[in-house]
Length: 133
Image (cartoon, rainbow, N blue to C red; front, side, top):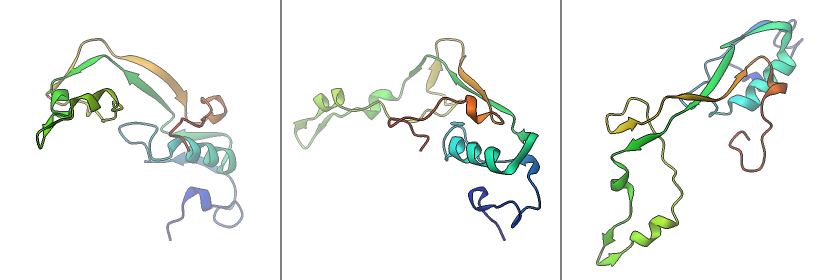
């Protein structure tokens, strides 16, 4: 029966702390889907000291880019009303898929930050504005 790592208990589901933790919860955004709090909990409670975590590390990469489709995501005239001034209030909240033809990178990629999944005590701590939960 599948059990979430948050529900696993040493002595109940596992005889002893694990030698290896393998997970496939990393998405294209690396830190979505609750990865930081889930990994932090699993490493602290379920992994033996010196155990292995797979994947071992991750980097969040950034680059400057130009999205040719951005103009299509703006407000325009609808029903005779000019709604374009609402664009100034809109948060730039859309996801960018790597490899999209209308996205052109104009800089080299750079690591925004890198961290080891086996060392959650060294990760940036979440705050109220964070998506880390």
